[in-house]
Length: 130
Image (tube, rainbow, N blue to C red; front, side, top):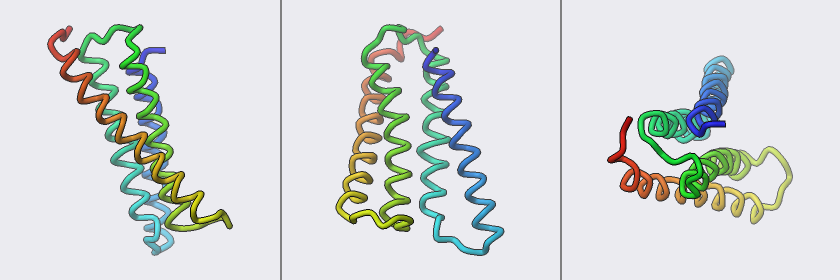
């Protein structure tokens, strides 16, 4: 599957999840999920959509290891950061705090690595537009 399509589909999933969470908070009148809701929309929906657009606009070789690492760290990092934030801040399960903190940190660090890889990608492949 092309990276642009894969990222677009995950972006759509995050858009729905963020909108659903926002409507739930509005209906319930409780805003304990607001930081998680915001991160789902920003790092999940908007960032993955922007990455998808980049892959659509620029010629990135299909066999690029850099692109492969970027795409999968973006997908895994988005999930890790947002679910780790949920586990750590709202404590929905009786999980050890050390576990949830490490999960949150690893998710965020993976996402940060994805953004660094994206910076490298833009310098490597931005001169060969369609």
